[in-house]
Length: 272
Image (cartoon, rainbow, N blue to C red; front, top):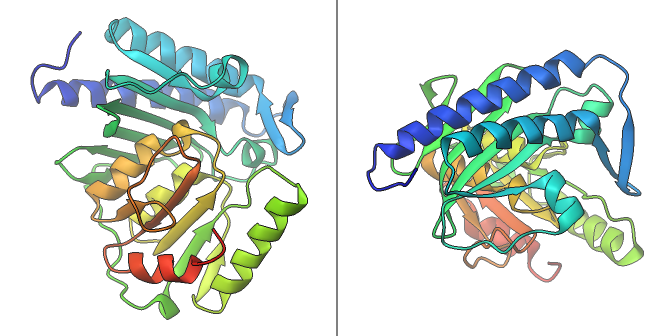
C-alpha cells in the first residue's frame, strides 16, 4: 500500500492506533504479574512482554502496509539498527519504560511512529495503565484521547518544569556529565522530573504538563519518532541540545514549548 494521497495518513493512524491498543492490552494484562526479565545491558531491561508486543504490532502493520519498512527496538537490539531511508518506515517501541513496567510504575507506553523522508508524519503513544492515547498527523494537530492538546505557554525558565532521564550507561564519564548537567540546570528551573519514558516525556510536553525536556543517550529512534511528531503538532519544538536541527538517529534530544528553546540551550551550554 502506497501513500499517494494525504488521506492515506488517516488510514495509517487508524491502523497504528488499533495496533497500539492491542499491544497495550497485553501490557495491561501483565502489569501486576511477575515478569521474566532479561538484561540487554547492566541497567537496560527487556521482558517477554516487550517481545510479544513488538511481534504483534509488526504483524498488524505488515499486513496493512506490505511495502513499508520497519524499525523496532527489540529486533534492533539483536540485529542492529537498520539504516533509516526516505521510504515510509514504521519506527516502534513496543514498551517504552520497561524498567517502570518491571517495577509496576505506571509510566509505560507503546510508541508507534511513521517516518517518511526521514521526517515523522504520524505518531501514536498509548499508556494502557493510565488509558491515555496521544495521537498526531503532520499538519493536523495533536490529541489526547480525542481532545486537541497544546504545549504550555510558559515563557520563564525559572517557572519551568523540566524532565530528563539518566539513561542506562553507568561509566564514569557518562555519570559525571549527567550529574554536572543536572546540577547546572537545577539552579535555573522550578523543578525536575524523571519519569522513565522518553516518549511519555515528549507527550507530557505536548499536553502542557511539562515545559522542557532533554535526554543525552536515549535508546534509539523508536523512543522519539512518535513523540516528536505529537509535540510538534502541539506547538512545541524538538531540536539538538546545541540548538541545531534534531536527528532522531543521534541519541541526543532537547525539546521545549514554543518559548523556552533558547533558554534550555543556554542552560546546557558547555556540558553537552
